[in-house]
Length: 292
Image 1 (cartoon, helix red, strand yellow):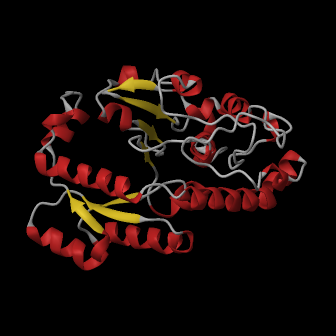
Image 2 (cartoon, helix red, strand yellow):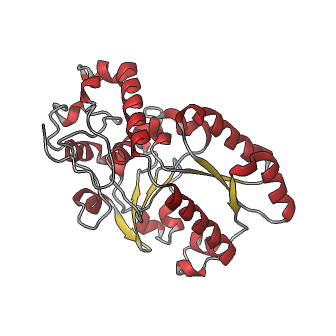
Image 3 (cartoon, helix red, strand yellow):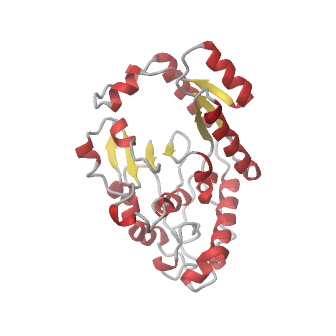
């Protein structure tokens, strides 16, 4: 399993049990964008150089694809093993970023990696993202087999969900809701009234999660059975639906063209539409390492 903390508030490492001192030693994807580009470019003849790649550059024949097995060189360098999974973090704002850079420059590495990730059945990638409209500042919201929106039983929280659904409506993005901090039956009723059939399940307040966030690590089996069942239901749903590689490839091309026309062509100085390989479709087991 591969987990990525791509939220502007970088708390996932500590929530998984690392100390603050350990968390700050993790490689920051936002500081390795050039290395990631150079690796993923491979021998793709449509890409003149790593400098010609932007965050949406899609894979094609000759590109290097990422796999979740232990032999993947890039993931070995840029992730760490934590409680049985591989963890990557984008990094938060540094002092030099304030007033200069937007957070989306940090997640460019994640978007590139997801575009080149050939995961298969029984392999799971979980990305903790910013909530609400901020998630739509890039095309990364289309990179997932399913999006799980965590909603508390409040008007404000379900409002964020409806905003997300509205923005994603034209992009075939499968969305489910997981209720959080559910204390009583009335909370479930409220969520059902406001999100309907999108409600997959709900979690109560978790003593396990609270302990983890305070640095007390325990086996995952110690999660409250009712809360763990919601995670199992989410995984089962993803397993049943499988992966729509044609959709993922189509949206990768769409958002690459949008970014190319909006700013990429001017910044790089070439027509980035030429980077799209029309005969290449991502998929589990696909190899892109031979050129053409």
